[in-house]
Length: 372
Image 1 (cartoon, rainbow, N blue to C red):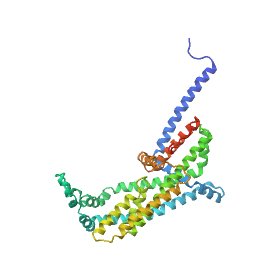
Image 2: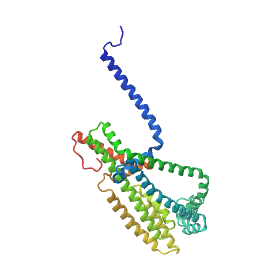
Image 3: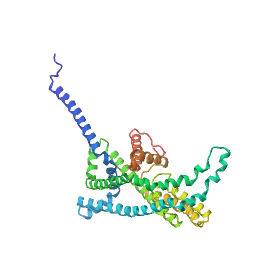
Image 4: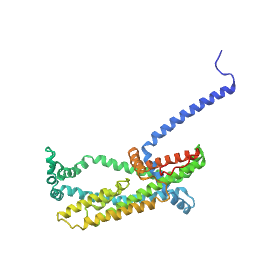
């Protein structure tokens, strides 16, 4: 007796099941191959999408000006982004190279050695030998800790010149991919969103909520962190320049980068600079004006920039409390690199949306907590 079903309807059901399994396998293979193809460019694609999300209202106005010619409007936007980023970056890189060379020269010539020798840290640590006879205070001398590292920088650059050039070429390629991705999303972004809404199994109100959360987090991250970091870098650099700190532009750039990390900030630059100015003034090399000014400037102006501009730029946007934001940013950057600055807070905020949707779906009253 054969096990093969004779009922045509039963055979159609079996073939339908086989077709679904075959289609699922083919889809999985195609998605996996697609991921392998785009994986090297994921960061660039995400950055392009972020830029488009932030600047899309401007794109709409440009598109209206050129009579709804989408390609022309997208080209104008990409050229504008290119000039807005590239020109300041070139000028800044030139200034950074110039001032970084000055920092290296100070480490290599006798002026830095004389200043560090006059600090004389070992003589102030002799008392430690009473409790630890084997302790050698000269091992913590600034001359032994800092000068060799400063003098080794040119040799390190010479040994790794090829890798540095390769890194510069990689950055240029990534930037080109960001612009290409931005052009594509300017032209096709609205169609992609409509297609995602059609394919989504979620109700339309939840799709809108996720979309609003996505845009809100990107706005909050870029306007709240990037703009605040730029402002803090500029204000820090200006304060260092007024206080006559060497390489003020270089250290202002460092402060800008560190300001992107929550609970780190520009204080990691201006506080050591103020200590350096106090030490230098105590040795008679300069007056105390620069040190006192920098302390007041750091407490008043730099902190005010952080509190005022961050609050102004993040108003009306969904954002996380300070500690979850710190975990999201640092964990995101550890997992995804620089782009984790956006992905980390985005994932946490979408998690909060999922929890909120779950509560509403099952009639659970919302809590008073900021997190969920």
